[in-house]
Structures are given as structure tokens and as C-alpha cells.
Length: 257
Length: 332
Image (tube, rainbow over all chains, first blue to last red; front, side):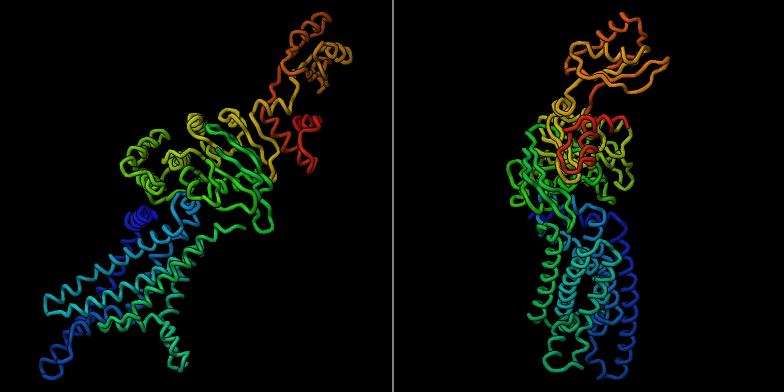
């Protein structure tokens, strides 16, 4: 499989156009604002706990700064809206421009095209995550960190990103309109995120299924510093399903008709 | 090198091509001619393995385009209509990407890209964004991406559309130079282009092939006679009779009024037989004023008009059976 040239091309297109830089800029700007918020809050709590001992026993930076920084309500919105920005162009743009026609006549398998594009998007996402490492680095300057919990948190965010990119890639593969691709991705991710919220009301077996399908439920454990195999499997499976759907959508061109 | 057998493609209820069959020998340059919507692009897309046909088969370099598509794609260079390119890439990195995707080994890549840029006359824009290129340069970059892996077969859809006359000349020379080592199939609207560049031609109309073969043989087949246009000031009936009696003349037709009360005629004679001398002698003998004497070359254009327009008039009957149709259309 000739994934490498496709992957390289996608990365090149992200970083030689303003796209990747614009996404990184927005992401870091908002994350910086959140970090400032949570860190100040944490600092205030620390001050108070210093005055009445016993209160500060459960006070950790991982729990009070890093976790809300990534899984707080505002951050969720940020992830849900930046994913379409990364993925909407992947296939839709090539379909619209006709470059897909040319690409599909090169001796590159459809699977390689899907994987190359997926890995390209995931790499940009990984760069975004890596850029946020400045926050733990800053904290570490002031106070010791729980490295294990932090690593788990980042692992969770990475597998989450993989699933998100796969969803975005799929939606981008079914339309040639980038706006539709972006909106569709946002809606689909929103549904995947919020589907568990109805679990309480549904109750019983249906409630359990809804909860199991929900992205937020599975991300929770990672945020708490717990790696459960079922959560890892969930994200890997979610990615695989949408990559397969993307492949089918691309291959439908080649079906006899 | 290219064998197309009874290819049929439906788009839903619309049949784009029906039972298209033709072959292209190795090293040949074949022109694919037809009016808009005749099915040229569809046939080329099938050949380039972009989409499968509904029925029939096509083989390129001995491999089936549907079942052994990867093998075909390794051996083909395709340039679609309107040349889709990555607007946000620069020319040299773009060609490097194409070469890599087509499996040109790393060691040869840089050299291949440089060669192909030289050959397609785009070395001077190699660091420009494709977005900023003029139509002519885009077209040549499109040709370069088809050529970069040095494929045995080239499928070019309208390679000279939108170019200025100098560029057209350059591209034609380039394509012509590809013959021999590459097998080329190109579609075009411009008929003289085919005569200039191609050795063979396939004419397609409304999804079916209406004529094919080497150009001179086609012309001969459709226009078995040589033609001379004459304008003579003299008594028309006598002039016509006089010319009719020249040995070798098959047919004399009055085509209109000349000046000074004379007439214009089209004289048809057996191919290879030049009757201009005799016409002159005749006019001199009879003291008629010979005002014009011109040999009319029967070109591919006339063959094209005849098969395509002739088909439209006669519906499904094979074209080129009634010479009257062609003359009528040609003089329209």
C-alpha cells in the first residue's frame, strides 16, 4: 500500500496553506484562555486550603486544571468545532476540483488514499495536542505533576481524536460540498457525544446501550486517569468503522453500473 | 496496446457509449473525434480505470481495465478534461508527489521530474503555486503529470483546449514526439490537429463509433474521387459537356453562377487523376475565359462532417453511403 505519498501530500497541504496555522492559532488562543481560568482558580483554592488545613488534601493540578482544561464543556465545543475544520476538505475538496478522478487513476489503492488522508489529519491533531504540553510544563515548574494520570489523559485525547478524524473523513467522502461536510461532521460528532445523556431517562437495556455508544462516557475514564480496555476498544472500533465507511464511499465509484 | 471490445456505459437511464470497439497498435497516436457529448470522455475514463464500464471489456497493455486495474494504472498516464490540479501546491513538489504516487523509485524521481518539466516547457514555473498559473501552463503541468512515470500508454482528454496558437503548436510537437515510444490516444475538437498529430483516427458520435482507421484511408473511403473547382465564363451547357467528356472525369456539377455570365463547377475525377491540364486545354481551345481552377483537397474535416452530420440525417443507417448528403452538408 502506497500510503506514504498521500500522507505526505496531505501534511504538505495543511502546513503550506494557512489552514493548519489558523486552526492551531484558534486552538491555542482558546486553550490558553481556559488554562488561565482554571489555573487561577486552582491557585485561589490552594491559597484558601493553605489557610484551613484538611481542605487541600484532595487538591491536585491534574484534577483541577488539566482535566477541566480538556473535558470541560467549553473545551468539548472547541474539539467538536475544530474537527470539521481539519477534515472537511479531505475528500470533498478533491471531489469538487476533480483531482480525485486523477488520484484514483494512479496506482494507489483506495485503502491507501483513505489511510493516508486519515493519518494526515490525525497528525495535525497530534501536533495540536503536543502544543498543549506547554501547560503541564508550566505547572510542573511550580508544583509536581502526576505523570501517569497526565499520560492517560493524553492517550484518551489521542484515541478520541482518531475517532473524530475518521468520522470527519467519512462525512467529507460523501459530499463534494465542504460546508455540508463541516456541518454534517459537527452534527454527527454532537450526536455521538450527547447520545449518552438520554440514558438516565431511557433506563434499562436501552439506557445501557446509549451509554455505551456515547463518546463522552468512554472519555471519562481516561480523564480520571483510568485506562480500561473497553474504552480503548470503543475508540479503535469507532475509528475503524468510519474508515471502512469512507473506503466504501470512495469505492462506490468503481462499482459496475 | 489498447483493445476496446463492445464497451457500453450507462449513467442511470442514459447510455453514454454503446458497443464501442477499436484497437490501437503500440507506438501509434490515435485521435478520438466526436461532437460534444459523443462519449469521448466516458471512453477515456473507462480506459484510465476511473470507472468501470457497464458492459464489454477494455484491455491496456494486455491487462483488463476492470479486473487488473492496478496493472493498467501502473502503465498509463491520464490527463482528464479541464486538468484538475492541486491549486495550493507548487509545480515541482506536485510533480514529485505524482511521481512518488505512481511508484517512480526515489533515486530516479528528481531526475524524472526535472526531465518532464524540461520536456513540457514548465521548468520556469516550477516554484510557482499552481493556483497562479495561466491556462496554458496548467495544461502543460497536466501533461507533465501524465508523463512523469514514463508510461507506455497516454490517455489525453482535450490536451490543447484553451491554449494560444503558439502553445498549441508546442504541445502538438510534444505529443507528436511521444509517438513511437508511447501509445497515445487523444480526444479533440480540432480536426486539423488530428491530421497533424495522429496516424489514425476513431470517430465517435452519439455513443457509437462511426468510422475508424488511418486518416488517408478514411478520406479515400469516404471521398473516392478527386475534386477540382472551376469557374469558366462560357456557355454553361457546352462547358459542362466539354468537361464531362474529358477521360477520367466521373461527374461534373454546377455549383453556382460565376461572374461574366459564366458558371462555377465541381469536377470529380478518379482519385490520382489530375484533370486540371485538360480543363485548361479545353477552355483555351474553345476560347472560353478560364477564371478559376483549383484543386480541392478532401480532408478529415469533410469526412467528419459527413459521418457525423450524415448520421444525424439518416438516423441509424451507417453513414457515408449517400454522397449527396455530404455535398449538401459541406456546402451549407
